[in-house]
Length: 422
Ligand code: MG
Image 1 (spheres, rainbow, N blue to C red):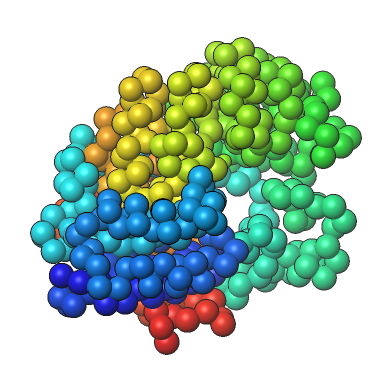
Image 2 (cartoon, rainbow, N blue to C red; image 1 turned 60 degrees about the vertical axis):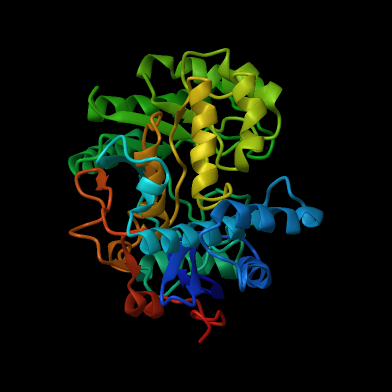
């Protein structure tokens, strides 16, 4: 069996969903998804030259071949691994179809039939669609009001707007958080996550990494509102997007302790393990991180030093599905649970669910697609809705278990990008 081609297609959703298809000489194709990045499809196109003529069943060796080919350009992590992750996942789809086995079985078999999903929630009305540099754009599917707000932002960019800062003047309140939490819990989710680094009426400086007393109190009031709204039967997490210094992160994590969070995510930047340790070891609030760590090598020191309570690798980015299994196993050896980060379409989310089913120390898998009206429509072959009552039933069909809905993908495809070679 030989690889004959590798092609990509990009769909403009809330993020750019980048699909990879591996073609073979046996009439089997494999589908994977890569995490958005600038220049991503060009990198995947470059890797094609390494893969043509190879046997797609040698997944681990091909992963290694791509890894070391890119070593001069930076083998320790980064965008190259977003590309590798999508290709690797597509190879597993090929292998599963060839051996007529679902991917989870190739990764060791399953611990669970249903994978618990945590819903990433947005409390406000404004919908965002972001390009590879997290700059707002307005694809045609966004409602007109949202598109208008984003157009204003694009035409008159707010000076100094940094990653994650709101594109609109929307003000968040504890009531908005409580209402949204009730709504999403009512959809059957047993775990939800909100951003806590949202526009705060007491903020004096968004660049300093500091928090005023009033800011901390406001953030705590959001957490309190969510906890009161959903009671004790729904798990609640909050994300901070690496925004704060050590001491203010410690202070916030301490103040959040009474609310029994599932986790507090990325209080400090990810590259300083000692700083993460100081935060994590200062508080009873579990600290999670990992969406910007690559491969098991990227997680090793953080796990060894106790910098993480929960590991959150992104399987469309960290190196692929087998690498995801290896990271989960390494976390397990440190008695650390895995809650995969995920902003993917159903293609990447279902691939992640195969891994989540196959590892013992799985906690919950992210779903970041609630604002995308066509999220469920992007695949065919799944029996019923992909996400039902807050869970994904792990597919039993060979390989990934679903195919891309090409008609829908084509409708939302990014212009000036090839659609699987067309
Ligand atoms: Mg995050």
